[in-house]
Image 1 (cartoon, rainbow, N blue to C red):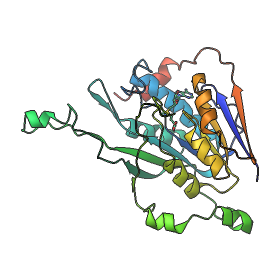
Image 2 (image 1 turned 180 degrees about the horizontal axis):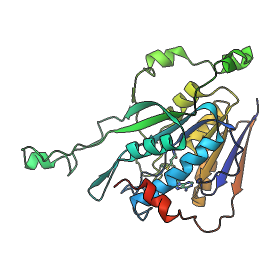
Image 3 (image 1 turned 90 degrees about the vertical axis):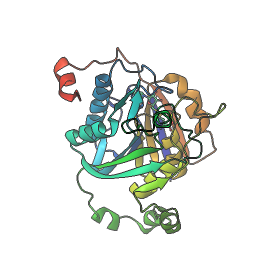
Length: 291
Ligand SMILES: C[S@@+](CC[C@H](N)C(=O)[O-])C[C@H]1O[C@@H](n2cnc3c(N)ncnc32)[C@H](O)[C@@H]1O
């Protein structure tokens, strides 16, 4: 089955190019607020970040098909000594947009390459209560659902499609996909990597989620496409995809990531002519303020 992959260079807060209810699965990782290494000062404040997420959640509800899944890969973020509750806030905004909370997987990264930071090392200098600030080696995979899935859909699928969508049980049991903790090596921040400075997630994450939550030939969306990891894996697994990315400079990297020869699929790039970044009204900004 031929697949189509559409990259839109534009702001994902309105994904007007995508028809209503046409997306079966979303996998995405928004900027980690003003993460010190990848996104310092991207947002003027935390409220501006939440406003973006709120807008995206609403449009995700519009584009998602009934009963289908949206996954956010994210975590709380330490910025200038202050920890921001990103996981709780995204969960709240997704519920407000109308989604059901379905599950949370904890993605654990190898601890081998983390050295005790200045933050967690304070206890070594002051081995007394109240000096404890741990180093983070996890992220959350937040799983939301638009209503409930109608399983008669599966019964009506052709045997060929069903077979192509079969989840390999040796991966499921062997790699322990059935647990709420997934141990997966992250994309290491090495000098020459394609994903340098993008905070990409490893391919293993969309690979698992696409197999677990979409059927062959369906459509997967990533509103914060970055280097194009979700799209690459969707293409390899015979799914269609949409991706949004605001930074046009990533076109070359996305193209490179999608460069493997797959005769049965087509990649399209669209450049949206955007006016000024839309600003939310004051009252809406106040509604989502977390403190
Ligand atoms: C954490 S990265 C995503 C990395 C991606 N998962 C990967 O594996 O490469 C977040 C991306 O969202 C993009 N972005 C930020 N704001 C956006 C917006 N309003 N619309 C679309 N993309 C946006 C950033 O430029 C960045 O590339």
